[in-house]
Image (cartoon, rainbow, N blue to C red; front, side, top):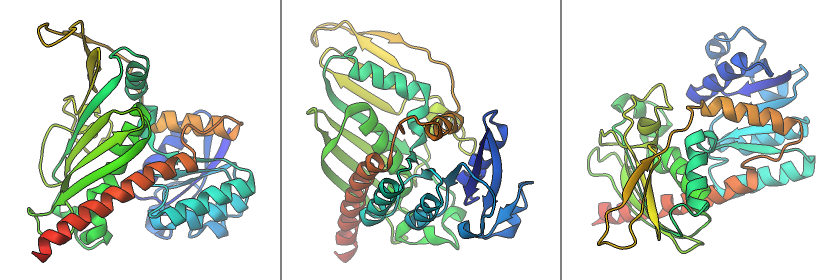
Length: 335
């Protein structure tokens, strides 16, 4: 049994804590959260800050605000606690570099919470694309469109520019495409904000070039209800109704695949022939539980599926998208 603490009891932190309570290989040693009411929701010792913890701990799950990840990772690693740090690993590259350095100095692993990599369907998609079932990847097209309720932005940090879905949501989609297709070598993006006109990017299009020559795009919006998006398609988030609709299409030189249905289209040599569809089936998995199981393995010496340096590369691409979408929208406002 690994004794784990959870720091930060917001939406995702509370889910981490409940996952630990339900896991046969883990024990929730304590929770760390400045809000006493949130601490009281869990029948374990609670502390207001990490440096107050006076219990034996094997590892720390850090689900605190992203701008505090470096501070909290440094504290945890200095105390000998390997970390699972929620995504994004930090809000800037300097913060990510601090976590990478602290991990190296302590000689302890940092796992980053890009939990989509743990979906069985995502792992199978990667096998299909990288295993040659569709030939050499050529292009990818992804859609993520939801309408967030107005209350999501009211009276909190999301009310301003930081409420853009790029750092909150697109960091997931960018990491997914990196995991499936390879490293990003070029980014072009534009943003829009004409629906709410609230001074923050709400919609946009991202174009990516990968190191294998493939290109891809992500169209996104948090102001447009739709059945298309990773959470809707995979039904992974209990707070977002599932649709089962595909949200990602990848085409290669010998065929194509759509996700999450994992429908592989093949058999056509050129446009004169009709491709044949072959849907695949994989077992449903709970990504947070799978991630927790992997973290326990990391505590026993396994290599992290996505360490701090890997997560830094996802962050670098996401920050470039954020900068370009915001710059394009600022230009529009100025005009």
